[in-house]
Figure 1: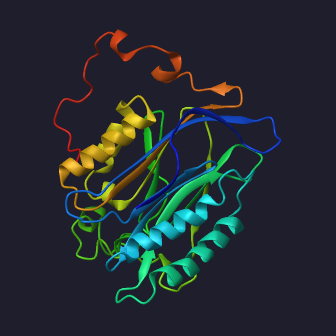
Figure 2 (figure 1 turned 90 degrees about the vertical axis):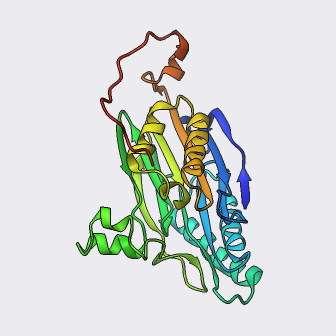
Amino acid sequence: MTTRGENGSRRRLPYRRGGDLEIELSWFALTDVGRRRETNQDSYVTTPPIFAVADGMGGHSAGEIASAAVVRRLAELGGESSISERDIDGVLSDAVDDIELDAGETELGAGTTVTGVCFGSDEDPTWRVFNIGDSRVYQYFKGAFSQITVDHSVVQHLIDTGAITEEEAEVHPHANVITRAVGFNEAPVPDYTSLALIPGQRLLICSDGLTKELTDIGIQHFLATQPTAEDAARTLVRQAVENAGRDNVTVIVIDVHAVGDVVDTGSLESSGIPLADLPPHEPVATGPIDLR
């Protein structure tokens, strides 16, 4: 396990160096070895304007070496005024060279997934989302929950081609087989997408140790009900470990409080109303909800 950066609460960051626009964010990253693994091969980086998670794979310590190389290289982009796809491609290519040098010859090879977000290069405030493998980025905004990234995996390909359903994918024997990675002496090929950067937005970046243990309904529930990024991150990791903890679990939760003069007035936290002072409300669910 390797970490770069630190957690932040209500930090105001320039969207562009020398520009007037500032973004107010809180973020919290957390990782846990889980209940079944002896070592933690996940790594993460939180060095604004870039945030990312890497989930290593390979024999012995090879996965840890691979994920560490990726976050170390991505951390070099921290503090930049803007980050382009070319910048990310470049540091990931450097990470492949690092992995080959640091891991040496291993029976299974060494590689890692990576997924994350950074401030985009558009004039309008934008997240640039990138991913290789099956670690994911999710968005929760005003009750709507969506997966932003698309897995690079055998089961995702089977879903896309209509060969299996999403329910069948959950128990497919090749559920852990990915089709892209950083490492294994191959050029990294990230997918990129743009996402509006807006007040009230909550982003989740996670390794598959989380999504193995929690359904989308469960993840949405905990993102919706926890008042702060730290609370959400701690709750998600705890729930995943308590459910089974079959893999390392790593999450980064990012809350967007304000974009320039536009403030998220919808959140209780930003309004300063303590949760304990609110009157009791009627429950919205009438039956059990599977959060695993």
